[in-house]
Length: 324
Image: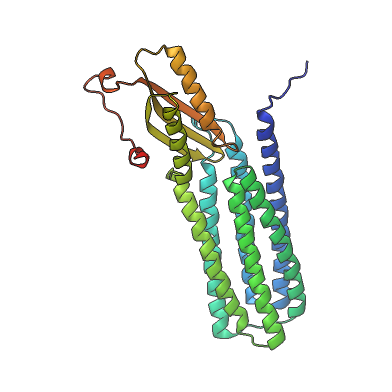
C-alpha cells in the first residue's frame, strides 16, 4: 500500500524543491555571466568590464558554496547536531560577504592602476551590448532568488540573490561607464566607474557580514519578541495561564526555537495544565506561519518560590524588562 505524505509535510517539501530549482538556476547563470564578461573584457580591454568579470569569478565560487550550504542546511538533525544544520546559512552569508569584499579590493586596485597609466580600450560598442544583455539576465535572476528565498525562509537564497543584484548594479555601473567612454572618448571614466562599483560592493558585503554575525550570535528579532510576549500576555488575561517568565527564542534557518516557563494554580491537575499549555503553544506556533516552530514549555505552580529549594538558581530572564 502506497504511503501518503502528511499534509503538513507537503509545504515543506514544496519549499525545498523551490529552493533547489532556484539554486540550480543561480549556478547555471553564474557560469554564463563569467563566460560572457570574460569575453567582453578580452574584446574591449576595459578595466571596468574586467573588474566586473573578476567579481563574477568570486560570485561563481560563492554560489557553489551556497549550493552546498543549502543542501547541508536541509539535512535532518543528528547526534552531533540535535538542533539541525540551519546555522550553516549564516556561515554561507559570511563567506559570501568576505568574498565580495575581496572582489571589491581587487577592482579598486585595478582601477587605481588604470587611472595612473591610462586604459587601452577597443570595441566598446560590442562590450556595451554584451554587458547590457548580461545585466538584464542578472536582474531577473536576483529578483527571483530573493523572492524564493523570502517565501521559503532561506537566508542562503536571499544572500545569494542580493549578491546577484550587487553583481547587476556592478554591471550597470560598468555599462554606464563604458557608454560614456564610448560616446565622449574620455578614457579615465572607465577606471573611475570601477572605483564607484567597488564602493557599492563594499556596502553590500558589510550588510551580509552584519547579518551573519547577528544570526550566529542568536540576536533576537524585536518584532518576534514583541509578538511572543503579547500572545503570552493575552493568555494570562484570558485566565488560560497564571503567569509566565524565562521567555527565549532563536532562529536557525527556517526553524524557530522557543522556550518559556508557564505558571498555573498549584492544585490544578497536570493533565489540565498540559492541555492549557498545548493550547498556548498552538497560538504561539501561529505567530510564525512560514517557519518550522519548536516550542519547549516548562510548567510550574503559581507559588514559584515555595516550589523550589533555597539553593535553586534560575538563569537571568532577558525579556523581563521588555514585558514591563
